Length: 256
Image 1 (cartoon, rainbow, N blue to C red):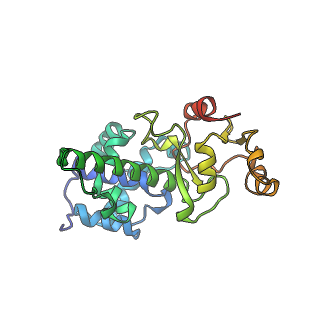
Image 2: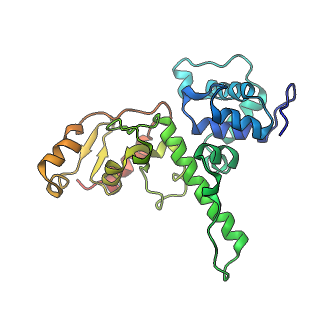
Image 3: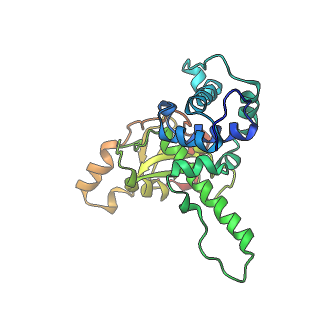
């Protein structure tokens, strides 16, 4: 799409950039970021204008306001309107396919598999695409907020990282795409957290189930679990885990 300058942003363009804002780390809002460049090309904006819009949204984010982050004094009325209407509407932001598929790195991942001839193909294709895009948005947002490292161990290998749901996906449609319902964990601790073998206290310190030690050799337990017990996790740059979600995990998932 030809790049436009000196033209007003549309609501749709702002939503795309707001979706991108949620899915890349705060420190990656630069005009040289390939994702910023690609987003600009797809919506017909320069990388500089996309980067500036990301900074404007950051200045509207209460989390960053507490940190003293400010925009460049040109936050528009439309910026504020889009932020107020769409930030927190995770289903709508995840359905902004330009940002979600760009950040995920392969739009082919979101193409639906062959469908049964006995079903409404168009309807199911849409449903599958929506679910997969939602899952990708959640993962992108959680991992970006944690700067792509496990919040317990600091592991940074992408293939070993998971966006773990605090309240399971199957329990609530309201929380399943909410990045504050997520933790970036390595695959081992993701499995333990998912099965209630560990949880987080109110102060974000790691609590281990008494049954965990019985399930493995003492050396494994000591090296991979006990050394992190009662230690605080590395909190994300934004989307801090919601205390109410953690309380649900301790009450309904955790096996004390």
